[in-house]
Image 1 (spheres, rainbow, N blue to C red):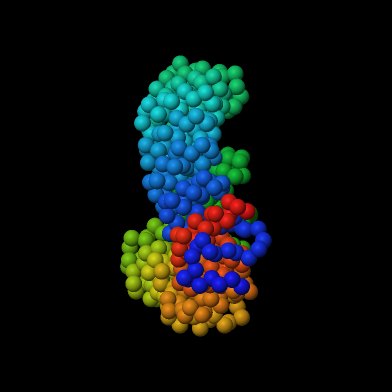
Image 2 (cartoon, helix red, strand yellow; image 1 turned 45 degrees about the horizontal axis):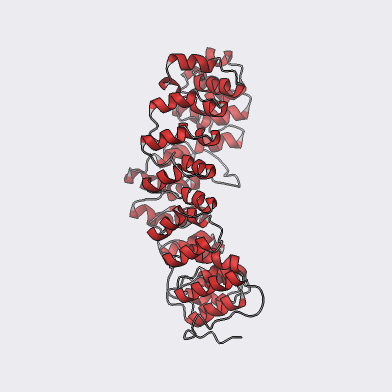
Length: 472
């Protein structure tokens, strides 16, 4: 093994013989939060895949300017895909000489409002694939919409016809679009003009309805007249009874008539209604199915009522408690109550979603389930003592050892050589990893992306990696 002490210069550092993993090093440097502007600019020149431009959270001004003036259109197109681009930069990309860059800029302009003159240039672009994206641009002037609705390309005309844009078009233009020679344009007009018939809410209207899909949608969400609600309770199809049992517009007394339904799915829907008291809920004999938990939007609608959330957190129904636990913000008393819940699924929901979930809960749930890995990144997860898990046979627990803020260097070094790739990759990217170990990993070609992405990597070694990648 080479001598890779921290005192060794980048110029004297050499990896073992064999091809340098230049592609992987570049990927790592592109996402390394400590990579300075001069290294990022070298990445642009050294042939790194430019997709990182769209994904990297921070981009120094110098790298912005370098990418904007880059000779490779793929670099400029990747820059156009960045979120929240400055208007000045996106406007320049919208006038780019390469049509694929202009297309990317036109797509980005759906999120960023460009000046009218720039939108006019895009609307007059010679590339129809660029023009067809312009009707969705933010702040599009009405006169440009009219121009696009009369474009020579049917793709553009069809894109200009939507339910929201149709009323903005002059009558003569709408008349022409209705009679357009292209079927795609006429179909767009039909979609724009389509007004769905109201769902039936009376018994007579329901009986006259022949579409089974609309019948089920009526049962599930329409404001039913009482006679229709009573009729639906007796439907032979359990899907209809399930739908009406979950309909929040169904009066509570009618819903409770389904509490003894022979179909367990119907009884479950009744038990999950938001209008029931806990006494009423306790009379329903249900069984929670395997699989994803049921969605209860009515719980989220009460997120601003601390007293109501506390009441629901005490519910005897685990699915209700789990829905409360999945809210981002909860009163402290509800958090404490749910953190001690006997149901693991409730504690897991609190750990995964609640911003105020206590660290003890995060760790206890993770240790019990050996996951999910997302808990490791929660702010309260790390704690002294987790390094003691580094010798456990379960990879998930060794992974948790990295969240010990006091993990000794020798533990980090051992985890960077772990037999489990996920553990070793995570340790390779840990900025506390001793420098000599990090350079060893780079020399060995072990987990090159993560090692190159380590923020502790000295800038001189970043340049050295790019030198070696260019020579490979």
